[in-house]
Structure formats: structure tokens, C-alpha cells
Amino acid sequence: MILILRRMPQWFFQYTFAATAATIVSGAVAERCEFIAYFTYSIFITGFIYPVVTHWAWGGGWLSQGREYSSIGATVAYQDFAGSGVVHVLGGMAALIGAILLGPRIGRFHKESGTVGQLRGHSVPIAALGGFILFFGFLAFNGGSQLSITTKGDGAAVALSVVNTIISASFSAFGSLIINRLHFLGSSWSLLATINGALTGMVAACAGCNSMYPWGACILGIISSVVYTAVSYLLKKLRIDDPLDAVAVHLGGGTWGVIAIAFFDKEDGILIAGNAKSGYKLGWQLAGLLAIAGWSAAFSLALFGILKLLKILRVSPELEEKGLDIPKHKEPAYPVEAYGHGHIEQLIQIMENQPKELQFRTFNFRCFSSVLVFFLNIESKVHTSITFG
Image (tube, rainbow, N blue to C red; front, side, top):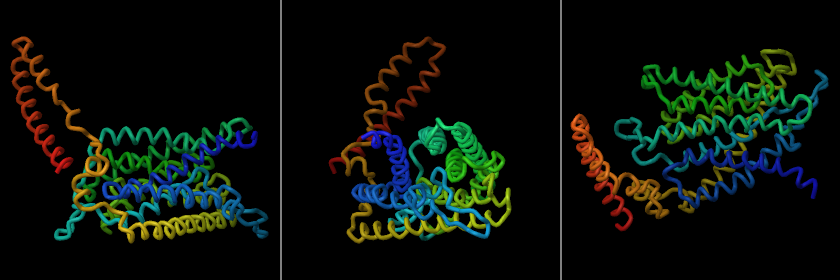
């Protein structure tokens, strides 16, 4: 019983990692995936796909054991401190397979013109809030992977992990902002690209945030921004619809992170030591990367393929056009009555009772209110027709 109690913190920590691997997929299949399919793949990823890989890399499996090389008198093994490969490559590859088998959302790609349709999210500020929540969550995700804080050296390792995570995220966010400002990518100061760039930098830092110098994290973040932008651009060219850029962030960032630690490790990195052990280390990182990606791809292909054959992978075009919240779940995500009904008239009365110098503002407010009420009434009728029609 004491042993079980001692392992409960590890249970909780691994629970969060398994949940992360599953939720990565949801971003790539958003707005068109059946709920039963989402429920099914979440069970298989957390219950089978992820546990096998975490045993390989962290539970005494072949990746964590490595191999002893007599020529250098040392054992070399796969290194992945906080899951660039174990969590993010695994989840990102499953997301890629799911997005391919589901196909793009209606209106995402125009066959005649070959252009990419803009299916925007409902709230950039809320997306920014989510990005900040993830930013702080990654500090615990990476720093907590030390799994101890009481033995000598734990504090320094956790501190280095947190600092490198922040540095990599910051440089990647800034790089993504600048790259997106270039004319061939749309010439805009994109907040969404900046958020995803920061996330990619943190994903890449997972593998070696505890064992690289801060200057290495700077380079890691800069290249992460290039990786994110390139993968996102490539997916659009291949007409693969990934609404949240989950593949670019997690598969792209995770792949780069697994490889990068072979170059930036402060003891055995190619750029630091540059010896035979560094070469073996790169080989083990590539072997682990291929094994994890291959395992995730094979199982995801079988799982999503079966769901597609059973015709329970994707919702009907009618449901996709209407949205799943009302016709499928009978719960509107954004009920119209919560957006001003019963309150606009009260606001108009308050404004009319203001001093004369505010009459012009009151007139403008009345015009705005009339337009708002008009559109709210139209929206209410649309929601009613969808619900009961």
C-alpha cells in the first residue's frame, strides 16, 4: 500500500502526458469528426498507443536501455526528457493520419481555383488566453519531468528546464511573427502564428530542456519557428486540413526537438563534444524518432481506417454545415439569448437619460443598437430553424 501511495504522483503526471497525447489529435480533426470516433481514439491512444511508447523510452524498454559500445567505453540511449517524441511526435503523427483520412472541411479548399478557404475561429482573444495557459502549463510539464525536487541537483535541473523552455518559446514566437510578416506568407503581424510558434518552441524544448545551454535554446527556438511555418505551409499545399495547426506544432516541433538534443546536449552534443559518442547519440535519437512515429502511424492508420469503414469517423455534410453543438448535442455553444436580448432596450433608455452634450453619442448608440437587435433576431430565427427544422 505504501508503494502504491508513493507512485500516485507519478500516476498523475503520466495521466497528464497521456491526456496531452490524445488531445493533440482533436485539433486536427475539429469540426468534422464524429463524437463516437473521438471517444474511441482517445481510449486507444491513452490506453495502448501511448503506454507502449512510454515503456520503450521511460520504463526500462529498449530505447531507455540503449546499447553499450566498447569502442567508446560508454552506453548510449535515446534521450527525451519531457516528451518531444514520446508525447508530441506520437500525438502529432496520429493527428496527421486522422486529418488525412477525414479529409478537409467543407469549403477549406476550392477545387476550381486551387485556393485555400479562410474558415476562421470564433475568437482570437480566447485563443490567446489558451496560448498563455499552455505556456504556463509547459513550465510544469517540462520542469516537473525531473520527477524529484529533494535530492541534490534537482533544483538546478528544474530551473534550467524552465529557463530553456521560456527562451525557446520566446525566440520561436518572435521568429514566427517575423516570418509571417514576410510578403510571400501574407504580410501580417499574426497573433495566431505567434502563439503557435511559441508552442512549437516549447514542444521542441521538451526533449533536452534539462541538458542544454541557454544559447542552445535560442537556436532551438529560432529553428522551431521555421519548422512550424514550413510544415503549416506544406500541409496547405498538400490540401491536408489541420484547423489548429496541431501537426505543425507537435509533429514538426517534436521531430526537431528529438533531433536537436543530439546537437545541443551540453555533455555529448555534436556541437559541444563532436566525438564518436555524439554520432551514436544522433543515431539513437533518429532510431527513437522513427520507432515512435512508425508505431503511432501504423496503429492510427488501422484505427481511423476501421472507423472510416464503419462510417462513424465523419459527420454528415449537413451536420458539418450547421455545426455539431445544436443538432448533435442539443446544447448551443453560443446561445443567442446570452448576447443582448432583454438588455439592449435598457441600455438605450439609460443613454437617452444622459445630458444633452451626449445626444450625439446616444444617436450613434441607437443606430448601433438597432443594427445589433436586427442581426440578433435573424440569428435567433436561424438557430430555431436548425433546432426544430
